[in-house]
Image (cartoon, rainbow, N blue to C red; front, side):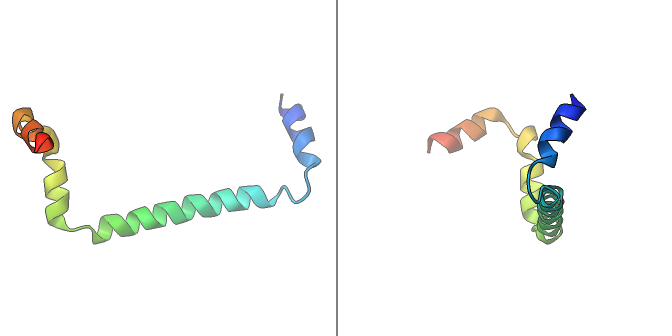
Length: 65
C-alpha cells in the first residue's frame, strides 16, 4: 500500500511543499487558539464553564424568548 501511495506522490511536481503547508496551517491554528485562550475574558470563561451545571428549564426559557 505504501509503495502505491509513494509512487503516485513521486509523480507530482513540487509535492514537497504540501507537508510544509500542512505544518504551517497547524502551527498558525494553535498559535491563534493559544492567543484567544490567553486574551479571553475571565467572566466569559466562568459563564461558559457553568453551562453544564445550570438548570435545563432556565436554559430552555432563554431559548424560547
